Image 1 (cartoon, rainbow, N blue to C red):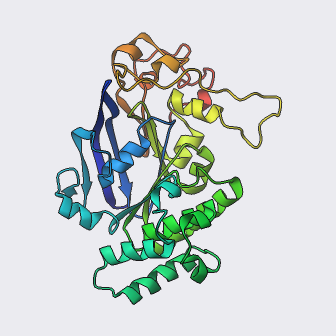
Image 2 (tube, helix red, strand yellow):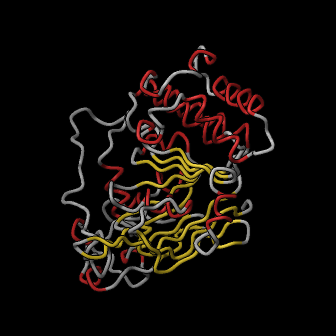
Length: 345
């Protein structure tokens, strides 16, 4: 296994609201290895973006951390000062946000915005040098007629071009880690594919370690080396992309797979959406957060949070059905039963 460049350990992130404490992340642990693309998947509200924004400490003022560590370069990012964090944010760890129209300054030309970030993180560069670097970045992310686009305002660019500007800004200071928070959500399929190909090429050229947040399993299969499945602020399952797609070992992951059309499936076969809705994190359930929507739920699932079980050297899952003492009757992870092809290795 390659070197670990970022480690999140038992992260708990909550928000103070008028209705009470929203426990958005309730004990997430994961590792990012050098040179890999780690996908984080799950439904809206499962804690994907909050986990990512916790790394860069860009959460709103009503957010706070009750437990956990985020370890980078031997330091816990949750404990370092604002001054130290400025040396990390943008320069060593950068982020591409979901919507470029809310991330870009509408009153500033896009080239100037890239240039400003470069000069802030690389203060020794002159303004001419920063401009030249910014223009080179626009060309590198394949914005046509980059010299003219440099002096455009965000509203004068298409959605795909705005996202390319965001990629250029994120890569402007040669970071070690890139966090991409659903960067293709608002784009049509053709432009989405172009952005994904560009990101994959940039990652390989710069030897970046990437956290890619998405709800699109097709994107995960195309881009990611490993996958973390979140639900209800917890890690349900994690493993290599092959582990997750070939041997899903949690009912939630199986549900996600069943709700996505396959190229080789029978046209008469209907998709199987997951019934119900995610739990409220104002009052999260005591046991497994997926219990109310799980067709295989047992009594214990509502009482105790499941322990994490190692399915293989690269694959773990948090489900009571994988426990050694779990009954085989109706268990999709026991050989010889229905859906046994989903069983753990």
